[in-house]
Length: 447
Image (cartoon, rainbow, N blue to C red; front, side, top):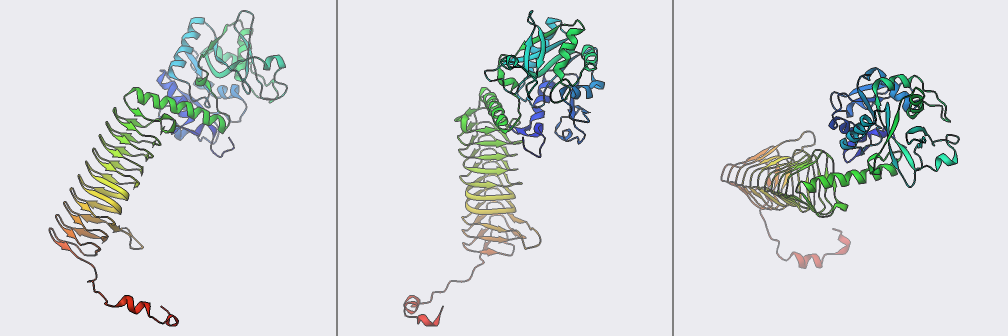
């Protein structure tokens, strides 16, 4: 991956890759999930509660990784081994593998797939009776013959085992390969040598077992995962106008009859209610949008957009922005750590930060809350049904009472009582004849 981030922590639609695998196991009904980590223990924070971690002290192959988890294996239960870098596996595919394993009465069952280009995968060598004889790795020169490399059926890295038989065979592993590692598939010939059956379960959809070895693979996996996420939302009643330009993270929730217009991106813990319109060209990160809201050409992170609100176009909602029901944040409006009350409007070209705006208020174009004095942030309180004139600046801390007005161009530095008009600007005076004097001014006199 050429990355400081462990491969299985790279995100796939907003979730670490390893979390996709763990969730698939949990949803398939696993009684215990064991994740094999390295001594730096970097995976723990990305795992759901209840997941057990085993430590592989040295990176010595997949067989050694499973051996590191041996103390967690119940010999009386079936064991499914999943690969942390194969995130598209589904609970249904795991269930089918276990059903095939139990029906075959095998000690081990390997999930396989057939690929037109099997490069990089271990090849599955079948015995004359169709059972699995062994897996030949192809990672390094000398691991496989030309005939073995020509095999199209490959190991997915996913297995089902009889717990007791797996524990016995792990002790037989030897590093007989070019890399000197212990490969888990080498338990298969060991099991056959003990007289146990080894079966194969072909997964018909190869996308479920796509592995990630580099960022090209990661992009391909994300493409399939994103389509899966979008199709689930569309099946639940969400209209996605242009799936090819829409990005929705796996943990986003969207209500029915909502429309996602082209260029929409929904990230993190974003939730969208019913009947909303999001986009075009809108990005929402960890943001809640209520029923019936419209959010156009907007970037929002950590915001709360109430039901029936109108946002955008070209609005920026920063963390702590809260728009209550039927409020409005219009064109080129930025809101940060501020509450805009029900039905209140900030229509144009304004910055509202560290403020509370009461219900039904209307702030004119160019309204600014001057919330920072160079050392500390201060809060502005604007009451209900306030009418703010255009180009009004509120210098915090300041309070404007209910039903008050501010005159256009005012810099409000003192509280405005309920129902009052706040005027804070220099009285206009006209200098007659100024243009004529300016035209005849001596150029050598300077300005």
